[in-house]
Image 1 (cartoon, helix red, strand yellow):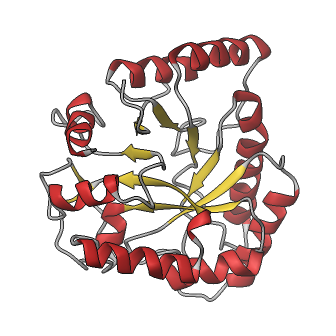
Image 2: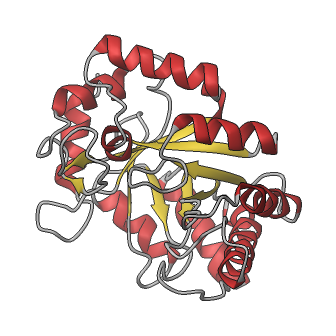
Length: 276
């Protein structure tokens, strides 16, 4: 196993522990999972024995870190029932995480649906952080399809307004590329990291999602492609993996897989060859 942190988002079918076994089987050492179905508002329940087995397996297989990815239904900018459900779902998830030694939850914040509701968004984030353990991180993922967080300035505004060290950022390579952020040369990547550092702070950057893009640069679409088979290209992924300011971070794939069944060993193997 490589000492670099390379992993994938994998299925929890059969239980959380099965996801740990799946990531080890494809050669990864860190992991992202849903806590429940991403297309429903299912309440999470993990018994004491299930928690014990998960932790034993996590330690034995040396899978670390592990992250939750929040439901696709989340919209923290909604002032109605969806916003309330979103707040409760993330509160439940972040309360569950420490007992499983899971770092926190990665979330797409949602959309304003043509109405400016940033105060609602900020209030929901503050409420979630207030009612969850200090060990749990709430991790904003950048968006690439006209959703909240497509612009680094917008993420910076949210981070500074909330002003809590537990609010972190996950950068998705496909979403960045789609939103018009170029990192395909050393100079452009350096400029992007300098911009992120000045606006948000590199200490807030928790992890990367590494996904190639099916669509052209600045297309405003966020369709993932297998590593090296899209418009971003292998050189850019090598730059990301080996940049001295990034190489200690976890890199997690959400690629479609060569067989179309999700992140696979083939994609991780490509990244391992690129990582110096």
